[in-house]
Each structure stands twice: as C-alpha cells, then as structure tokens.
Image (tube, rainbow, N blue to C red; front, side):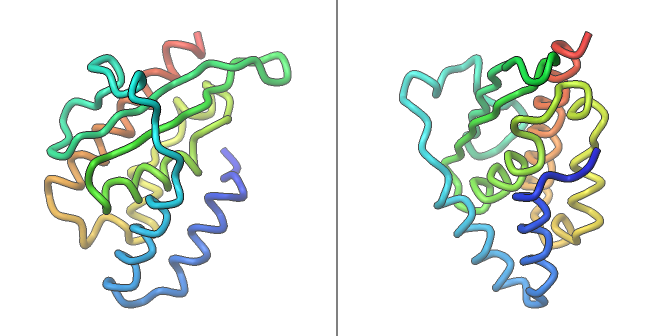
Length: 142
C-alpha cells in the first residue's frame, strides 16, 4: 500500500525528532488535533479490548471508486495513546478495505522507531488497535 500523504507527513516530522521527549510531545499534539467522538460513539461495540487505557475506534464503510473503503474515527482517554490513534487514522482511514487488511501498521511503527520507547502496555494496546482495524477491514474486503 502506498502510504497516504498525511501519514507520510507524520513520518517525515518524526524523522526530524531525535529526542524521545520531543517525539512524545509530537504524539500528544497529534492526538489533541483529533476531533472528539460523539458520546453515542463511545460504546462497548467500539471499545478496543486489550488496551489498558480506554480506546474507541469507529469503523464506517464507504463506497469509493467502486470498492469498499473504511473511514475511521477514534479517541482515547490517554494522551500518548490518543497520538497513536491519530497516526493509525492517518495511515488507514479512507483506504480500501483490502489494502488495510494487508498493511501491518505494527511493522511500520517499528520501522519508524515508534514502538521502542513505548511501555509494554502501550505497545500491546497499539497491537490491539491494529488488529481491530485489520479485522474490520478483512470482514469488508470479502
């Protein structure tokens, strides 16, 4: 999958930040820029299991150029995790379901060096979010 421009911009910005404090601040800024979910979207069905913090991901199928794409929205009650949600949305949202199902964001996060300073719980939460998004995409891609 060709990485979408918003994700490429984030990856480029991260490449300029050597210090982990700066990277954490950038993650927090990305998360703060996300629109909040509606209270009706913070449901058990949208909650991601496997995250220590509370995370909700809303998956909306949309027709796009004759194929099914996924529009994603998300939110977390933890600032760093909210930033991780923002990066996942930049990578996956509004992409064809089949492309999402085939794209391993965890490997991409590893290439960017984004997981090496995450706590085990945050890293496990990231994996849970990626698995949830890819599972939703697989269900729609068939």
